[in-house]
Amino acid sequence: MIRRLFIGTGTMAAATTLAQRAVVERAGSGKIGINLAGYRTGSDTASRTFLSVLKADLNRSGHFSVTSTGASVNVTGQVRAGSMMKADVQVYKVSTRQRMLGKSYDASAKAARGLAHKVADEIIYAVTGKKGMASAKIAMVGNRTGRKELYICDADGKNLRQITKDRSIVVGPDWSPDGKNIVYTSYKRGYPNVYITGRSKPLSSHGGLNASGTISPDGKSLAVILSRDGNPELYTKSLRTGRLKRLTRTRPGIEASPCWSPDGNHIVYVSDSSGRPHIYIISKDGGTPRRISSSGTENVAPDWGKNGYITWCSRIGGKYRIVVGNPAARTMRTLETDWADYEDPHWAPDGRHIVCSRTSNYRSAIYLLDTLKDSPVALISGSGDWYSPAVSP
Amino acid sequence: MKNVIFKLFVFVAVASSLAFIGGCRSKNANDADLYGSDNLYGDPLMGDMPLNDIDGLPADGDRSVVDPVFFAYDSSQVNPEEAGKCEEVAQLLKKGKYQGVISEGHGDERGSREYNLALGERRALAVRDYLISLGVDPTMVQTKSMGEEMPSDMGHDEGAWRKNRRVEFALY
Image (tube, rainbow over all chains, first blue to last red; front, side, top):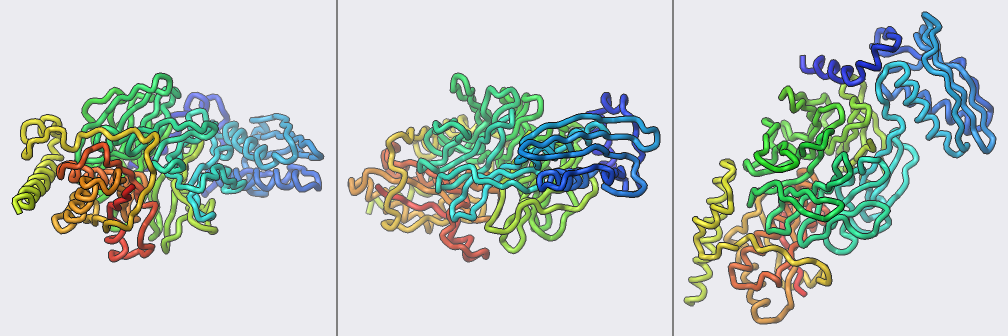
């Protein structure tokens, strides 16, 4: 019941767009068969990379099954690359021969993967009316250098690169709302302060703890955990004036992990003011918080998706598992996962997938979970631990 | 002797008030009122002492002077058997042997990293509060939470976790 409700609402977000689009019948697997056999590539590496990345993105999206027989959608066109690359893409509905997308793309041959991600998201939108996640970036913390540095990779786990070289400790990265920068906590000056990439001056450096910084959707405020007044509490800070507003008073309880609602009017966060860590929602102006988690011995690390749903990590039966809750309807469900610990869930921009860390035998890796039906996919694993993923908007 | 008895009294008062507040947490009580009216040891500012700005402050110190204070799982209460270490630090600071101390809070690997950062800070603040109650100048005590990021024992069992739930004293 809850599951069907979830699918229903996900669809509703794009209902207006969908109404104008051709409805494409789904195969028995519930997926749309899509055929790229007629898509021509040059013999160069960039062109072939483009096509294989595009196919993998379409399969990973959860909407499609790339097939050469019985498809209901055909992709035709060609890609050629020298130093520059040019891709022509036409997407047709097989039954009516109706064209759903016809576009020409140019990019540097070095950007073959990035161009494939962009085209994948445009095909997904043209056929299903829904936003994809192929172009998103994932920020995370990795320890392969022996220090804890900030890294980013593409949504398929490729193109991994190290962002910080502070030789210190990075905790809890999150993207700015424009998707251009990453806010994170670092000990590079000895104490835990909140920084943003591209700026050496910290966003928050009060005495005591400065952690879990996250910027509001309008880009004007930082929600942050500070202990400057004597206890770890939730604050907002104006990024223009620096003015602080304290939202909680729970001594000796503690707060952690704030995340803004999509409209920026509320903040979801963790508090142990009831004795155990639970998930609460509070107005950005303060007031009485509302608790939304009820079961589980620990409920931590909430993330409020643009789809309106909040995902968090709950310790159930001794294992950390991923929960998806609807704060309006007050319903929730636990995702089916294996025996490993799944933590730090973060919504992908498609509102369907969740990126999280999976820990087994004390090693952590980054995984992609589908809230509907597909199996988990490992995105980054090996060469040390990878954790605290955040997906760009 | 008298001094020892007084300290013991202060400690019991702090411990029982912490337990009392702990018991009231679920009622969402306004803790400003709670501390103002039900304060047991005559210091209404106890625990509400704002922290120093960190500009110009040392970020580390000598951790080998006094052993760490250890904590129970998910707890920030200073246990009676650990209190002696705080008293040792208070004596050193009051005698002017050091300029100040960083109360550095740590947690074990269980739970989320961000929650453990806040929990480590809460532990560091509980130790700070106790040092202040022993007469240490609040400006001499800074807090720093390392969360679960710097375990002292790399193991994954209760023995290791017990050693990792701690506050270290970095004296400078």
